[in-house]
Image (tube, rainbow, N blue to C red; front, side):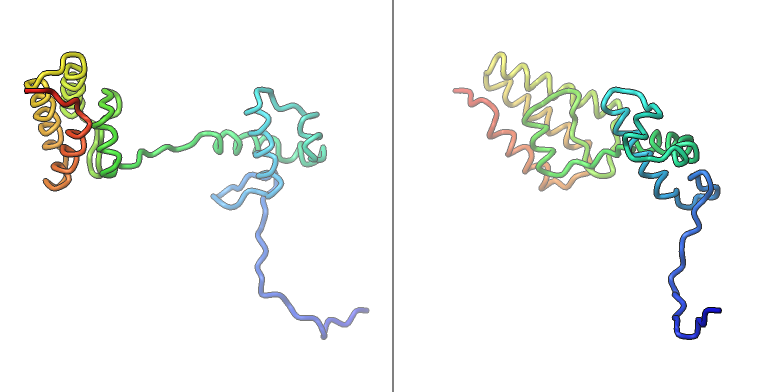
Length: 178
């Protein structure tokens, strides 16, 4: 009989891993299930399907494949869909977008969502900027700056930032002789 008097017990708690790899109440996935999900994602990204032989080549045993395949497939699907949240535009972003003047890339700083009114106002600025590039004359240049100012007035930004954007954009507008 072994004497366990000289051994220390560990205070480390070990995770309870679910059968079949899938957690029932929001717990952890089995580590091999996660690895299989990553392998499945890689196989699908390479343009092929996921076959039993592919998983064997990826160093999974047949027992692991039988146990974890369903849960890993669900996890692979969840991992492959990304949640994309749009970062609010910073001052440099606002200036770049105003200089480029593309209708589908309107500057939206923090606490601003894209509305129809903003989209129309931005479209007017893009049209004015395009008209200035096609037919540069002093009135077009002034109109372009005024329309940009009108768009920026709709945004929740400080007047100092508005003036900085207008000044930065004004530098890139074609110089028109009087």
